[in-house]
Amino acid sequence: MARNGRPSASARGRRNYHYAVGRRQSRSDNQRKRDVKLTAAQIPAGTDNFLTGCGWGGAAIEPLAGDASFRRYFRVRKSDGSTAMLMDAPPPHEDPKPFLHVAQYLVEQGFRAPVVYGTDLDRGLVLIEDFGNTRMREFLDDHPEDEMQIYRHAIATLIDLEKAPVAKLAPYDFAAYLREVDLLVEWYLPAMGVAFDREEFEALWKAALASISGPEWQQVTALRDYHAENIMLLEDGSQGLIDFQDALAGHPAYDLVSLLQDARRDVSQELEIEMLLYYKSVAKPEYDFDLHYALLGAQRNTKIVGIFTRLWKRDGKARYLNFLPRMWGLLERDLQHPGLADLKHWFDTTIPDEVRRTSPDSIA
Image: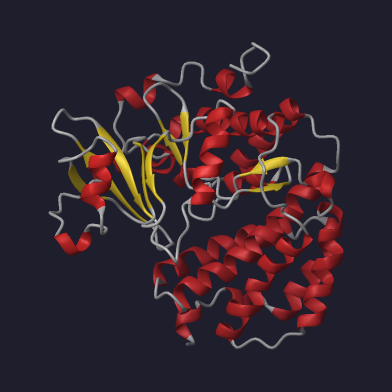
């Protein structure tokens, strides 16, 4: 329910949805389980004492798939079948405090973030509520007929988030936007052997980003990694939020871009258009929404091309190169907006099509 006592947009969006997760299984239910016996060396140091202090002493520990960071995740299972999630965010590489801060904010505002059961910040250990195995991505891969309804629910959550007071977070300001697009010239262009004028690149982005970088565009809690792999479908029909530790006070359309221009899942143009119409009909944005959406998409997708190249080049995670063709397709679509003509010209002349279609690892 919304704070005014009327159903929130997300509550309206999930009507008649709850049957799906409880009745049907997705491939993720089995894919994300690991029947592997952990050795002592694989369990984070201090785990036994930590779990005992949280009331979970003696529970079995099961490893789960990780992500693109240094964080690791484990499912903790008591003999009575109850479960929790153990996050291992080891310092100095990781700091769980931003996650805890945003989780507390989301829960206080009535959003479905994991409840925190216990923390050991010195070791980077956090015990949280277990949202199960049913991620939005795998569920929709198996049940595409539910795609429209589930995406509407996810967008309704964003509309509710716009209405909530913004969390106390750093601003998603001009410097942050520019620092992110610079990842393209720091990682992707050198990997591809492309010559470029950095001053020209930054000048074009400075001109483009000026329209969305003021404090008036820092009034919404932007989760910044809101997409189908970070939304859990819960048995009560709600959608659980995870992986929000990088949240900033930002633009209301940023997470919409993240959801509908998903870096890891194909979202059809037809679905994107339909969901944008739904969003505009409910949120009723009073600005040049199409321009801002395209600009945020271009900024985000430029950044991700750089990030995925870095994950391959620096961290040895070559699988992220498989996503680059999707990222280029999304970026090219965003750059079609007339308001981004100067940026489009730079991309077309600096990174021509034959370069975009070549994988970095084929020329390294």
